[in-house]
Image (cartoon, rainbow, N blue to C red; front, side, top):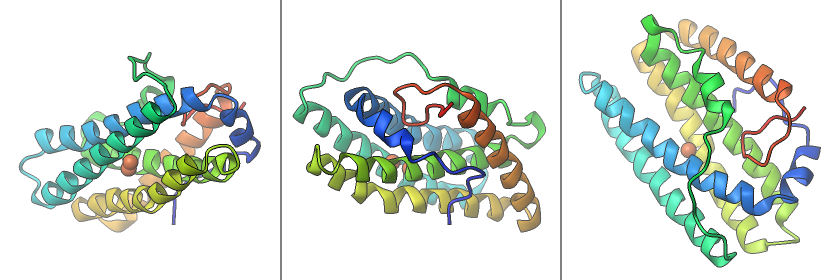
Length: 194
Ligand SMILES: [Fe+2]
Ligand SMILES: [Fe+2]
């Protein structure tokens, strides 16, 4: 189960498909960032045993996804290039409290994974008639992104009581919902829907 406080309007996928190459480039950066998030947590928390192997495995999977998206960019003739940072992650990370940084960072990561999973599912369906190979690849990512969402929630529960995690996850999901609902559409996987 994905803990999202608002579902993306299905019309989003149609608009995103009109900018498919930009979405794909953004997606490549996101996979690399997802690996970076896991590795950063490993560097920050070498003392939290429960994090080590799950985050190492997660980082490897995200780098494999990054390589996969790079292959689809190349197949579509799109050059991988530097990208201006989006506003979504920065606004979402503003919810991280200094005195509960690990819990909040794990749950922000969980919500990002959930949104990726939801949007990749919408995209997979929308692009099937246009680029079936990419649609099949997106379909193949859904199970891992859903698993990553669950893994981050479980890691939070390994460090904090379940009731604390549940309450904070609901608050962060509500914050994320307000970000995607209020931001204007842009050709980004986590772009706004307004
Ligand atoms: Fe991924
Ligand atoms: Fe992921």
